[in-house]
Length: 504
Ligand SMILES: *Cc1c(COP(=O)(O)O)cnc(C)c1O
Image (cartoon, rainbow, N blue to C red; front, side):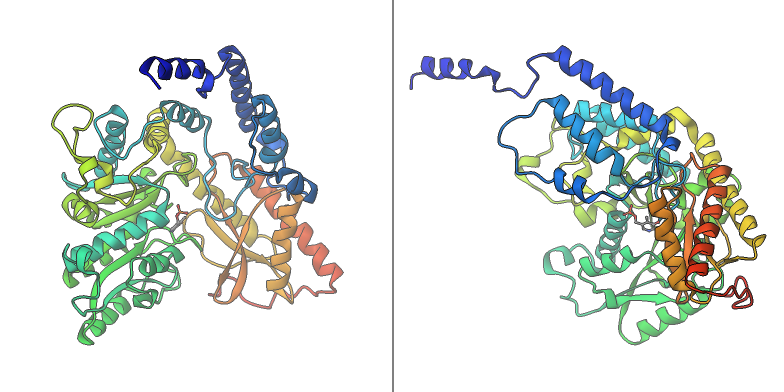
């Protein structure tokens, strides 16, 4: 083919771009989508919290890989009919399951803007990277970390905790371990966290090649905080046995009951024992924004690293996890790798080193920083702190309602925004599991369950900024209603002496 022939053949195919033939049509439809999603959030109370997916919907939704195009409005209709009504439900104020944030209209709009820019935040010199750096700087000052600290957005705290294990591992073994593997020195690295810590820490030890058995789950006190004396004994014993203690993970807000470890004591112990001090602050670390909660996080400023999620208490739409590392050099030591195609320059788009790809496993990365920046700017930290404090006040109200109701039993002290309780019955585990499923299917609320000392509890984690007193009342009413029904139908007898309240 001649140059001219090639040119002509390409020009005849210029409609192969994915841009719309008619921008006005897409604009009109786009505006409708935007209106619909704003209405969705504004009128969320009119919907059930969660709806089971009907079999026919699930079946109709499954389709072959589309070879041919479908009109955008038809694809959107399918979204509106089959996807939107059967979402998780965490936008709804009645959602209290697990620890999910509610999202905001501001975050949604920012996410749209980020998608429009389609920036890749692996590196290079562009303003989206500066937005991420701004958040790193804000987090550094918020947590009292020194200059030279580094931070990075990741999917969530599971990833941030894993990365912290990797940073601590490289800090302990030296960066040669990245070439030689972690076994070459013949020492077994051991890490420590509490029995109440999140399961992703065990998984992180596994993925990092340390092995989940090398994670010691230390006992907790009656408030579910790590027993620091027992931790010290274990570290000393392990070291005497020839093992190499390298990491302690403290919890700032456990998922089961919201306990915050004594971070100041942990920090001191880690300094004394020369081990890395990481804080899993997935949801609790942002409590630092609420003046009443901040003192409970005292000591977090001495951590070597902190993992947190903006998508929980921070109300930023999913996902927006974050890792902050006190010593940026150590952070880079764990991840930086040279590559010719990632060559750094001092001018042009390839400038602006160091890049986020030097401090994490990802190369291509989305612009999570923008929705977080919009959220922090639009609301300000005082308002976000007030929202966080209010979820704790609502938890206090739920606790008071439980204590005032003989049919209900409080299962754990309420420390933050998580309330664990159950309906009293002769077969409490079975009946409370059923009550939770009944409530989910009713669409009234969405609590989850947890197991505390072998006993199943209904767990209400109040994270959503939309949750109000009426939602707490609706949850209580639903638990009593379904509990009475199940107790009545199964011939269960109510025995309120079965166990004392607060027994751990
Ligand atoms: C949510 C949570 C995690 C996991 O975070 P993801 O963002 O879901 O990956 C870890 N630890 C605690 C304490 C959590 O609350």
